[in-house]
Length: 231
Image (cartoon, rainbow, N blue to C red; front, side):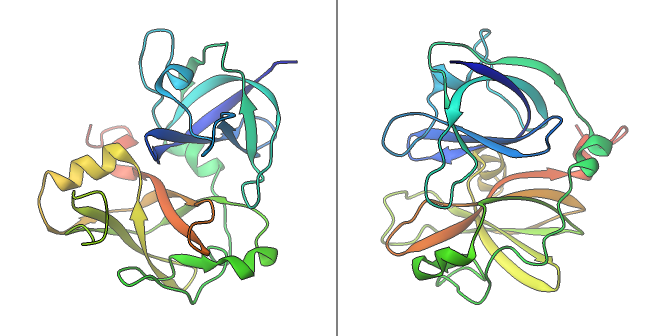
């Protein structure tokens, strides 16, 4: 039986050849990640786009038809989407409403584990029992965006974009999977670029080669969305 939930879209990020969509439900303030029945659980273009063929954007208020909760390992926020029904855009929120959704975790899950190019950006699979969710919305004073050459062993030859930031006393350097943000900074070339006060949607990947990886699935800079800010 299909039900409809209203979400503030807080991620539309890359997931293999599809997308990972996630948002906080209006009213309950719970995270929901609509997923498909396919391996990998990504959301296709047809499944996620509005009838006008417009892509959901971060901060959109969207109506999403769902079938049932479908938790999967650490992705306890997963809900199976109704692939026969279309999503719709109800409205959009601003910075003030985003602040009302801010979460204040004391850390981004478990720290102390790093990749070769990251900082506090992975969690070994044997630590899974200590993790109870896979999505966070945090506010940071600033972000340094780093564009670096692709890893030589990666199938993706495009430059890698990472977000470097400080939260609750800890430093992080985490790969960005927001395709709009990635493209924006790739076009600037290799280097480091600063952002001001921002909200970050931080997600955990599904298990891959014995680890769960922390990913920045969306970045909302205050200067971009407040009245009078950059457009």
